[in-house]
Length: 554
Image 1 (cartoon, rainbow, N blue to C red):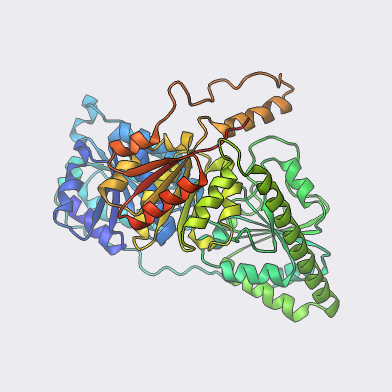
Image 2 (cartoon, rainbow, N blue to C red):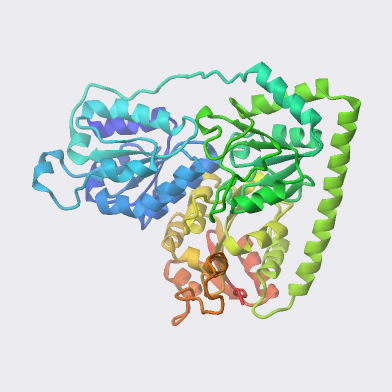
């Protein structure tokens, strides 16, 4: 058999049936193999970044490991930003690139470069087989490494002559690998006792609770101990609904603000993935010095990496949280139980008060021209079914999305990590492929959408059920906010204009772009037009794009 046949067999053995790709000449062996494997679906993208991002969101939504196939050196370069996003989101993707014939290495042929070194900084493992005999073992290892915690992308370069070589080495899997996930019992008891003694407890949580499907155990635990919950400000998956009475807010983007928010708590639990990512420098830790701090992670290598903690424990998150709940229930005194319940009641009352304040603020924004994003999102939420799946890259309007859709199932929210933009409409492609029976709402700012606008063609080509909503304020609004912060922090003039941050002259026309790529569309300036567009999407078949004119920063 040939190397390319081993590659396809490896995909099948690992349950991988999707390739998100952009074809090129060095990918001919792989493309030829698709004719022999109709069970593998190739999702065609017009840019390598779109292909990789879509694969990452597909992995988020299914838990499976897809292949993203890009085109040699320039194509890999195009994909690097989205590979970084997959790395930060901890999603398993096998990224491959066709490579030039290895017999031409010394001739420096067109398109050839050291792909392994190019990919290495943004993947967990980067490799290139030198013979067809290596393809089977390398693919087995690639799928294994991609799925070891913390999960993430791997890269395999595929020279076209190696793919066509004969080999007797078949595809294989790693088998059922069992890792010890039992946490140290004495450490668990120490943590539980400290939580029982605490007057007020805060929990800072990342993506892993949702990613590892232990949300129910997590919520039971925070409700049991009356803990306030702070989620990371940039999440790929939601560990808690924003309408949960224990949810306070997102964490801040600098250490000083986080210390201030957490100052009233004498016990702080950091659990499940990246939290407290910083944008702005401040001296010191995000965690108050006087507090008892405990970090719970799946991977011991993540403990106390970014900031010191009092206690750290690793293992299966569900097992650790469940065992802590059991120990607390068994050992907590009546006095502690009363304190837990009192704190839970205070959180619930504060949550109601916060909702009232939000409602008042919303009322003050109704009727502006252009309309406020909060009014646009409320109109959209009123017109869509409860089970719509949301892919969110609204950025500065994310709080408005949260407010409007807060009662939706948090498992049906997807977003990107890493801070690179363009993940919203590209990620919606992968989410729609993963969840073909669901209606997908992809919300993006206009600046973000232009990073991966080619995704519209893929949605039309594959007839994906996506409602693209572009919030058009004709500016990079988040950059204006960040420039304000920068000027304040560095004592720079604050009355200057915002350079190169307006998307005007010409103004972007998303309706025309959608038409050019075969997608039904409309533009809305009123809530009535938003509702009418939602109805058109729901009554149609395939993708639809709605451009909503919303207010900018000023």
